[in-house]
Figure 1 (cartoon, one colour):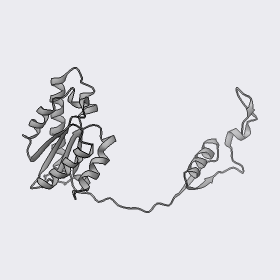
Figure 2 (figure 1 turned 135 degrees about the vertical axis):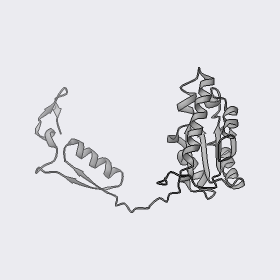
Figure 3 (figure 1 turned 180 degrees about the horizontal axis):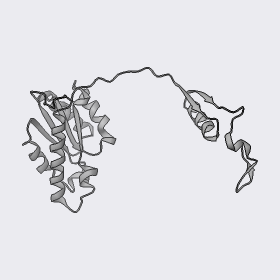
Figure 4 (figure 1 turned 180 degrees about the vertical axis):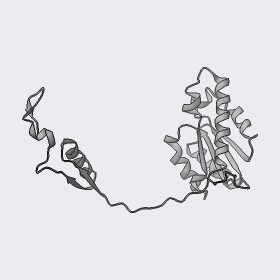
Length: 203
């Protein structure tokens, strides 16, 4: 974000409203959201889809980026935890930096928690979209660094937890260095003869 918080010039923002079947559209008036989004400053394209994350929905985003020369994309749909990578890759496929994408959660934050307040839910969704558009104005392209990683791990402590962690890492294909300050591994468990309630050997 710029230090002086001034937005870039010539912003062309696209807003994509997802109905998510009835997950969103069953509670939120998506038509009203689309019409509201058209009134927001710098928004030049608004497209509504039943499932924006599906291939047809992603194709609509790609098509709009090209046709409207979009330089910011805002998707109002479900949680970013599920589909933020999907949409980042979608915009990158047509040459837009994936960090010029903003996602607004109107499913978990709106429709799923306000099912009996449809009018209020729609107003809340409008607020979230307005906030998402506002934030998108200050997004800047980012370049991801590629850092070489040595596939090895250091486990400090050769107790039961350390031994198990080392085994799990090794099973995952990593070289493991297990460091223990004592002469033997096993920790406290190695000093115990039997364990309750089975009275089995502790190691």
